[in-house]
Amino acid sequence: MWRLISSLLQATLLSALFAPVAAADLSIEDLRSLDDQVQEVKTELLNISAELEILEERLLYPSSTQVSVYLSMERRVDLHLRAIDIRINSEPAAHHIYGIEETEALRKGGIQNLYRGNIAAGTHELSVTIVGEHEDGTDFRETSRHAFTKDLAPKALQITLAQPGRDDNGILFGDR
Image (cartoon, rainbow, N blue to C red; front, side):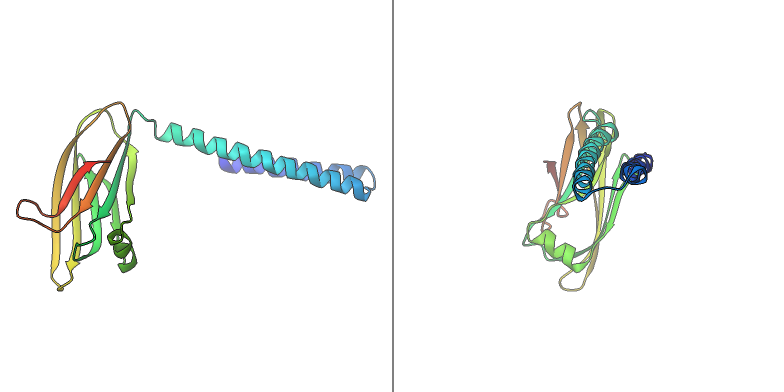
C-alpha cells in the first residue's frame, strides 16, 4: 500500500514538474512558483502519511484487543541479562537477546517495550523465561508465570527483574 501511494505521489510530482517545461520556456518567477507548489505537495504528502500511519496503528492494534509487555530491572540486580523469551497462553510472543549495553540501560532505569499485540478479552497466562549470568560468573535460567485478565481496555503489563528473595525468583509482574 505504501509503495502504491509513493508511486502515485512520484508520478504526480514528475508530471507537475515537466508538464509546464514542455509547454513553454519558464521564467525564474515561474520556477520559484513551481518550487513553492512542489513544497506544498511535499508537506501535504507528509501529513497524509502521518494520518495513514495512525489509521494503520488503530487497525492493527485496536484498543479492545491491545496488550503490551514492558521490561525493567531494579538497580541493585547483580546479573547480566543474555536473553528473554515471552509466551502468552503458551504461544511465542517475543524473544530478545541482550548485549552488555542493553543490560546496563535497563539497570539505569530504562524500560523496554518487549511485546505489543492483540489478544481477546478474558483470562490469559504470561510466561517469562530469563537467561543470564550473575556477576560472580554463575549462569542462571529462571521461568515464571503470571495470570492476568484482559478486558476491553488496552492492557499493559510490567515485568521487573529484581534480586531474588526468599519467596520469589526475582521476576516480578504488575500492571503498568
